[in-house]
Amino acid sequence: MICHINNSSKNLSILRYPGGKQRFIQNFSHLFPHNLNDIQYYVEPFLGGGAVFFHLNPKRAVLSDINSELIDLYQGIRKDPKVVWKLYCSYPDNKDGYYEIRNMNPEDLHLLERAARILYLNRTCFKGMWRYNTNGEFNVGYGGQDRRWVIDQKDLIDVAKRLKKADLKCSDFNAIIDESVDGDFLFLDPPYCPGQKEQLNEHYRYGIFAYPDQKRLANALKRATKRGVQWVMTNSSHPDIVKLYKKNRMFQPDIGTGSNPGQLSTNPGEVIIFSIKEEMF
Image (cartoon, rainbow, N blue to C red):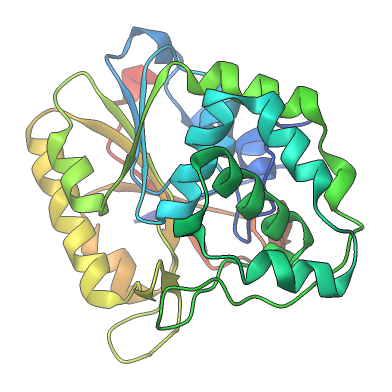
């Protein structure tokens, strides 16, 4: 059964991320356990923009994403945010320059350069999209400079401080979930997709996060639940997805994540699913 809930400080987030949870966590933080600092590890298998992690600021975390460039970004900022910022500021502020930076081969760059490059591309590409071609090359078009200077060096320094408490991994979600143990808490925000019959090109690094992946995710969470792991997940409210979690508690919010970075929308087709015990709220 799906229960409906009603909802009416700037979150620390340096990325533009479609479907990001900047506004979500401000409206739905009450759905997370109050004793978050008492858990062993906070775990995110789909890190993305990391808005929930940065908002909750747990004392220990395992953060993972299958996108290696995203993990490079966070590792580079954690290592030296000031150098990453200096490189970021050195990049051009025009369309031709954007494509020059985009056409760089990440394998020819050191970690801090890779971090600055992908941060620049994210802040100046079209709508903050993350998309790759079949060769694994970032191929989103130019979007403009208006969102480039919304962040500053202090933001990167603050992000670096919080990332010092985290173990960053580039991995498929299945391995990360299977490593979790009793006492850990997972937050999951997978790419949303429809049911078995529909096809939606949601990019999961170089591929598509499709219904079989949703089934893998559901099975991994069932195994984790049996081990005593607690978790909260946002996902599509498509009937096929809901059916995978029919034994779990769910809320369908009146507002949810929009398609634009940080945006909330009405009637979002989104559910919040969780295994958390009642006394944890």
